[in-house]
Image: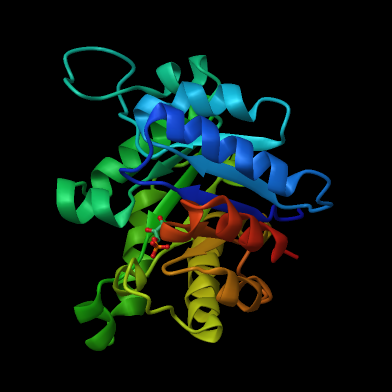
Length: 253
Ligand code: 13P
């Protein structure tokens, strides 16, 4: 199955509703007429999701949330469910971003519960994972990443695998200006695909889009996306300005 090329922007804790409307409009203008096969996704904060969906309608830009809870409803203060996201036209959701893991205590088990819940509905999950600096320096990248993939994807039904998107974000490259070289990133992407192949078979693994994230900029986006197993990018800082995010979209093959 052909893999989708995806360029996604993770806005993190940035942009009010007015700023969201403006940024989506600027993006729409900059991307108008662009003949690209890449799927473009913006992930604003929860308060801006509806505004983004509205501003992005009929532009080809899709909207994703940055988090979701695995329960549909109940006494879970501060959380939102996949049903709530689907009801306002959100199409994607980030799961297990490293900031959720390190700052908010999200575990591999939580990531798995969220993924299984999302796959019961219509959202496209983008499962984020990656090693921290100490793990890379200790030569543990392979074991850590394999373990994260196995834990996140445990009990996923084989027929749901084509809907999966994985984002490899080495934590030491996030917001630091340090990017993994394209070759380094591609090696880990191959490892991720190999682990998915061990779990679900090679054909299924071939269809999973694996994005790279961590200090992606217009200057490095094309060499990253030129790699065989890098199917797109998940962009933080550079997605907050229409000019730089549009330049990254234009770099997609
Ligand atoms: P930066 O692009 O700012 O390094 O952030 C990457 C990221 O965490 C995207 O989810």
